[in-house]
Image (cartoon, rainbow, N blue to C red):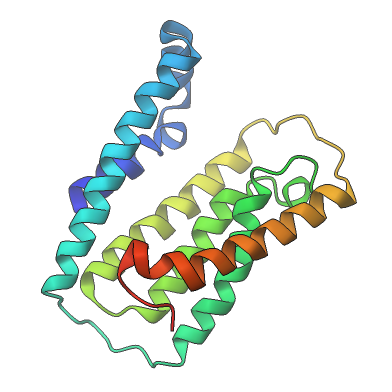
Length: 185
């Protein structure tokens, strides 16, 4: 799990620690080759992290036992997390226009919510690593030159919210058990 986290979050941290080097590599390789390499390394890291996380759950070390009621809090926090995630991809929405980096904010909310409801050491390492990365990445992104503003439209915002709610419904009630082996409630 830790090797996977280092690989996945490491490659996603290049802009945080070496943005000029990243730009130079893109210039040398070309954007498509850079994205292909980035994607392959990311997928390998994510697969290793998820596989290791699953193995960790077989023999857990408990740090604390969260109250069962926190699961409801997680379920509620995941609604804005999914809306933020969708906001990163829907053009011309007010959420992205206002916040600038909704995907990173979605990761923050997701990781924080899951830290609340999971008390195993592996959970704390897994979700804590994502939360720490998201905090650092958000700070780094706010320092970079912002993208040219796009005028938000009500339709883009409506699509974002409805799409986020649909994605939340599908994942929470249909895909979470399949992906994680754990029911939402």
